Length: 262
Image (tube, rainbow, N blue to C red; front, side):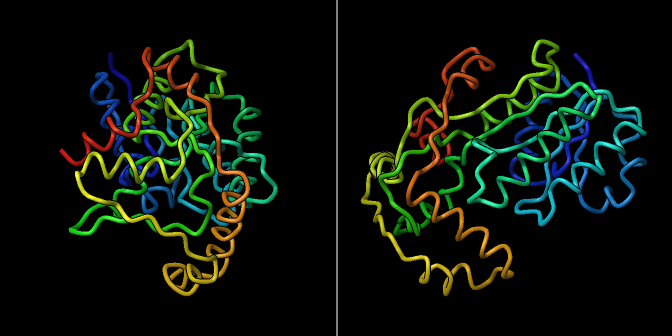
């Protein structure tokens, strides 16, 4: 199997997971970053398909996606897969709403399309778990439920969405095999690492004065809105879409952590 596929944001962790899966499936994939996309028509010329992923917390994702879709059509790209998010239409979270509008643009683009809607990755917590005293610190309720998913499963699903014709026109909600809480994650991490993982809840104000202080105000406010939503509702995400594409259950917390800390 061979295909010329452009992976936008292909040098980040998600893009690298997509490219790795495409390579495993025998496809020819190339990363495109911000520098190349200064001239998007030229950057996309010669590719048959593109994985469209905006920079994280982009201030105007619909504008970004609109420009890429127009460039893709002009460059002769016939198929796109858009990297959205689980539960995109949530007015309380501005960055989710940007993805909801971007989904509409993708569906009305005239191109063959697939949309993937992943929950947060298990791997997002790895930086806190690496080191001599692993811990997890979050500014929201640790007992709310999420469909945390393996980044590598998302990469494989994205690759298959770019290659398999049966997935054209699909919107795929991607969650792990079980709904889990951050408390569950800490417990499983403790078992895998064979040492206690401290779990701490901080206030939004503490986060704003700590990790959030390094961010520009708009991004900080958007993340605070996300934390507030997580505090009340979590982000439950089903596993059936992932399982159908993978032909197996997505990897669970223990499997992911054992592999990552191997």
